[in-house]
Length: 168
Ligand SMILES: [Zn+2]
Image (cartoon, rainbow, N blue to C red; front, side, top):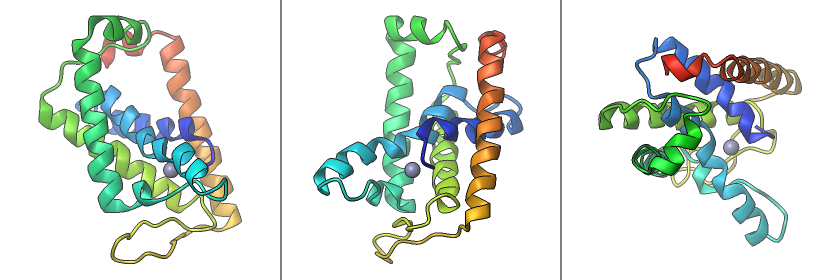
């Protein structure tokens, strides 16, 4: 997806579908953490491309889940960080398996959306298949981005209404 924060909309939909059982912070961070490689890859590639092995299913989900789980653990234990985030959402103290499962869901949703929004293909099956893979058309890309924007707006509205301070 061209704009990483738009991944949070689908993450929020997944959270809602779990009926609040998922960890909201983990699923949201997991939905964005895979793009952490983009600025690094962009500089290292001489400003020619942005996506690499973090956008493979194996590496993306494993490393994305690890980074997300560590971040959630740190944020929930460091009072300063926790109090900043709790201005917007309630930080739920979930069990480790819930945090990991939510992180996997967030990272997997990121990769799934990227399949439908990148024309040049991403290395989803690396290291088995090194070539870029895409499943999108111009219309599909526009539709996925519009739906993502609407879902992200839903998340923002719920945050602004203070709804996530009590139900997360
Ligand atoms: Zn991505």
